Structures are given as structure tokens and as C-alpha cells.
Amino acid sequence: MKKLIVSMLAGAMSLAAVQAWAADEVTLQLKWVTQAQFAGYYVAKDKGFYEEENLEVEIKPGGPDIAPEQVIAGGGADVIVDWMGGALAAREKGVPLVNIAQPFKKAGMQLVCPKDGPVKTEADFKGKTLGVWFFGNEYPFFAWMNKLGLSTEGGADGVTVLKQSFDVQPLIQKQADCISVMTYNEYWQLIDAGYKPEDLIVFNYSAMGNDLLEDGLYAMEDKLKDPAFEDKMVRFVRASMKGWKYAIENPDEAADIVVENGGQDENHQKRMMGEVAKLIDNADGKLIEAAYERTAKALQDQKIISKEPTGAWTSAITDKAIQ
Image (cartoon, rainbow, N blue to C red; front, side):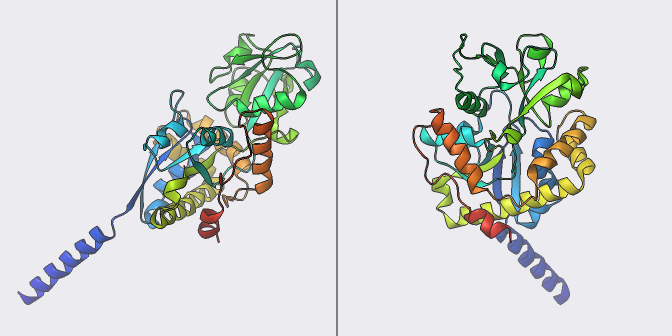
């Protein structure tokens, strides 16, 4: 009887300890639908990396009608995946977003044109119709056109901007002379549609030095002032980058995990994972200050933001998370 009582007391104490050490909840809002672009987060959850950091993470997929900046401003997320152009524009409008980590070191954005079309070089853009996505994805494109001295208002001395759908139909249907693609997604949709690499002229933003930072992690400035929240973000970033490292080293398994969570077409996800790995680099999640400055300057030059931002990024989280 004595042993039974001791056992019951131990069980009760164990339960109390578990309840006292309840996992901290984190809601992550993605920029787009479930796909290998976000594999690191799904892997971190599936492999228990978040659990090891005492975190319960909810991953919310995005979509064409979901703006991560609006979601976090409305309290629907603790942290979001966003492109810096959208984040800095939102910050200037009163949503105090701060970049806390930068998993993607390189941009995946490209402009592609059919080789048998009228565009062969940048000098051929004038007077042509160029497709680009909006909802914050247009900022790198506008900054590039501004750098070339081309108006985006149309006319003989500028370019006509086609608000591109999130597919490659504008090129296939000849609605545009060139369209925007991501190295890990729409480019391969063109290949699957019958184009061969040698059939395409590719303008890669990173190769041209026109890349603006993509797919960073952002939290709200006021929340980061709370030491408990900051600590939660340190653990979240550490586990997330562990997830990215695992995904890069095990791309097929990572793609399978994405598919299990709603990603479409296993072969496409595997191919995407291979391309995304090239953008992650060493998986330390640390922002390169020169890349931030280039991004901010390009946005100012295009008047997407009116002044040089301050306090828009911090290394405090990655300094503590990544040793």
C-alpha cells in the first residue's frame, strides 16, 4: 500500500511538472502555399526539433489572398515568412516588422523570355510587356526597371507591366514578352510545359546583383522587447535552422514530409527542394548586412519606401540561436 501511495504521488508530481513545463505556442504564417520553399519548418516540426525546444508550432499556409504582414498585424501569427520589400513597405506604413533571421541568402527570382521572342538583352525591354506578380513580389522588379531608367507606366520609353497570375500561362499564351519565375517553382513549370532550357533567355536577379532579400523571418518590434518572447524566438529560429539543415542534407525525405503536410506532386517537391537548398547556403539564418543595405537602397530609389529604415532587422536572435 505504501509503495502504491508513493507511486501515485510520483505520478502526480510528474504530471504537475509536465503541466508546469507546458510547451510555448508559436504560430508561423507562411508567404505561400505548402511546398518545399518552406521545407525547413515542416521538417523541424516533423522531426521533433521544435518539441526539443519546448515549442508547439502551428504552421499556417499562405495563398493568393493572404498577406503575411496583415496576418501578423492582426494578431494571427507570432512570426511570418516574408520578402524584405513587403516587410519594409509594411513597416513604413505602421506595421513594425523586424527581420529576426534570414534563411534565404540568395534570391530565387528570375525573368524569362523565349529565345525566339523580341527580347534578347535588357536593352530590348523598352516598349515590351513584362509579367510580374504583385502583393509585394513586384518590388524587386520595379527596383530593377528603375535601375535601367525604364518607366513602369507603359509607353514607348518604358515597359508595360502585366499583373501576372501565379503560373506561366502569360508566356504560353503570348500575353507577355517575358514573365517572372522562381528558380525552384515556375521555371520548372515552363520546362514541364515543353520548353527546353536552351529555348529560354534567363535574367537571374542574384546573378545580376539586382536581388532583394526573400523569405526572411519577421516578428513584431514591440513583442521582441519582451524577454520571454525573445527567448521563444531564439528557440524557434534555432529549431527552424536545424530543420533547414536536415532538409538540405536529406532532400527526398524533406520533400516527402512536405507532401504529407499538403504539398502537391512529390516529384515537383523533390526538384523544388534541390533548388531551394542552393538559396539557403550554410543554414545559419544570419542576415548579411550588405544584402540588407542593397535591398533598402533599391526600395528607396524606387520610392517604395520614402526614407532609410531604422531598426528593421536584428542579429540578437541569430547570435543567441546559432553558435
